[in-house]
Structure formats: C-alpha cells, structure tokens
Amino acid sequence: MPEEITRKLFYKLNEVCQITDTQPYVLRFWESEFSQLAPQRSRNGQRLYRRKDIDLVRAIKKLLYEEGFTIAGARQKLGMGDRPGTLESLFDPPAAAAPSMERADRAVALKLEEILRLMEATDRRLRERRDPAR
Image (tube, rainbow, N blue to C red; front, top):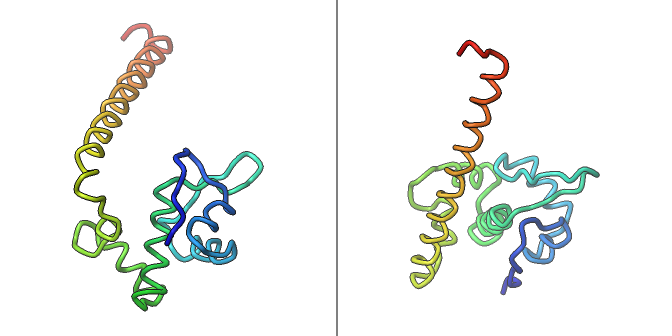
C-alpha cells in the first residue's frame, strides 16, 4: 500500500522515493526517459517534486512493473491525451471527492485569472512608462 502523502507544495527526492517505493537512481533515470517528469530545482540544484510528479511516478511504475509496458510503450501510453488509459484515468478520484475537487479547481482557476489580470495591468503600466504617447 502506498504511503499517505502529506500535503505540501514540494517534496524532496528522498521523500518521493519513500512515498513511491522507488530508488533515487530509478527516478533520475525516468526523468531522462519521460519528458513529463521534470521536477523543479532549488537554488542549490536539489530536485523538488510536486504532487503531480508523484502521481506521474506512480503511473510510470504501474505501467512498467504491474502492466508490463516497455519504457517506450509507457511513454506512448502517457502521451495519449484525453483517451481512456491516460494518466488521469489511472488515478481517478473517488466519486465522493469529485465535487470538492471541482470546487478547488474552480477556486484555483479564479485565482489564476486574478493573477493574469494583475500581470496584464502591470504590463500596461510598464508600456505606458516606456511610451507615454500611448
């Protein structure tokens, strides 16, 4: 049974290894084979994984170890978009969690729209400073 994931923004390599029951060298190799698995780096170069990265590691592991896919086959399976069998369908949330996740998604979308409006307003102000004739 996979370890329960504590809610954080970033997870270090060793934490992801513990959560997903994989070795660090395996994760580093998978990063070179799966372009979708690209953790951010801290200022000192340490890998910082997000929850989506952990879900992707679990999906890769399932495809390779449980379903017997080759790396090329797993790569193709994960790149299929919205068709059945993609990453999303491998980790479908329970039906009871869906409404709360939809609310959270809407809240995030609203915040992102707000950030976008602020960025656009800032861009306009900067353009006006450079070219006051506008």
